[in-house]
Length: 122
Image (cartoon, rainbow, N blue to C red; front, side, top):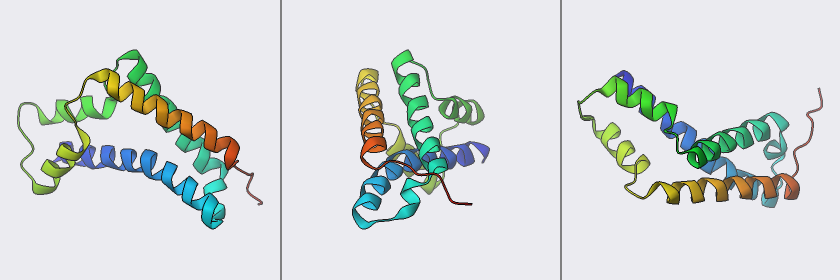
C-alpha cells in the first residue's frame, strides 16, 4: 500500500510539472494572477530543474527507487495503481526522456520571461 501512495505522489509531481506549465500559459492568456505567484513559480522551476538534471546525469528518480523498493518483486495489483503505472512509466530510450525534460525546462525558463512572476503584496 505504501508503494501505491508513493506512486500517487509521483503522479502528483508529474501533474504539477506538466500542468504547471500549461497553467502558466493559460494564466497569461486569461489573466490569472496566481500563475505569477513567486513561490509557485520558484517551486515549479525548481522541480523541472531537478528532473532535468536527473535525466542529464542518468539518475533514476528517488520516487521511482522508493516505490520499487517498497513494492519489491510484487506487481501493482490495484486498478488505479496499474493505470497510473502505465501512464507514468514508458518504455523509451533514456535519451528521449532527457530531451523532453530539458525541453520542458527550457519552455519554463522562456515563460519566466514571458510571464514573469511578481512578489506578493503582504
